[in-house]
Length: 295
Image 1: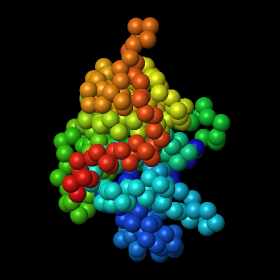
Image 2 (image 1 turned 90 degrees about the horizontal axis):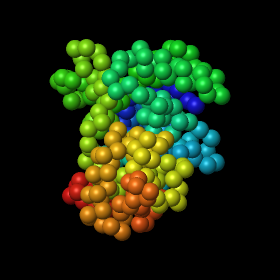
Image 3 (image 1 turned 90 degrees about the vertical axis):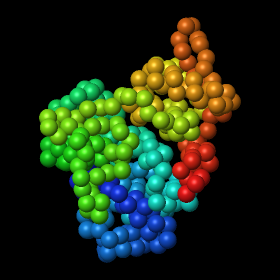
Image 4 (image 1 turned 120 degrees about the vertical axis):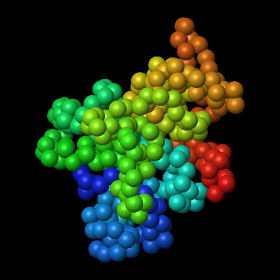
């Protein structure tokens, strides 16, 4: 498990677009000692951008180039289809990748799969991460490291209520906040998880399913599994079982060959007509996205 590669920075607007552009056009510039000049950010921010490119699944270690990075197949696809990261679906896919990447985003994986308090403040969140980390075989990081990781996580997702009025040229808000998964109420200091229904398209739902390692090749799921299993859509999207059921019904009405409801021993379930890998679902998403089709 890894903590702190983000240098205490959450992803900021424009960071991944600039980083992926440089990685695609001249990857050596992204890794050299003056990468901050090429990215137009500070030195620690440049390190953070490299971390986030890898943690979100846009970049991977480059073979034969120690310490270097190269675009993943997803990174290449995003660069082609949504180079400016304007489509919310792009951010949903990157979020799903973080939830499924405990090696580089341990806190992200822990929170969406293990955290149970819908309303909370920062202190018990840090304590919960500390206890969970202590149960893992790896060495427990220092309390300060855990505090920084939780701070970066909350900065990533927590949309401030009421909204701040910032200079758009100097905003530290993360685009992940626009997913509406977490709210931060300034008056009380509390954070609130958002389990309201969300406009998740069928390809994004399929992408979430395909990213769970245990789901490779599977075509049948119960609604309970889709809601509560590790890294399942219910976990990634913060959705209750009934809302998942309503989503799949809508998918079924649009194309029964992709998603179909089923019942077994009285338990509601879903069958995938055409299980795909994550890259195929990503391609399917961009082929049907209204944002990228009209960009």
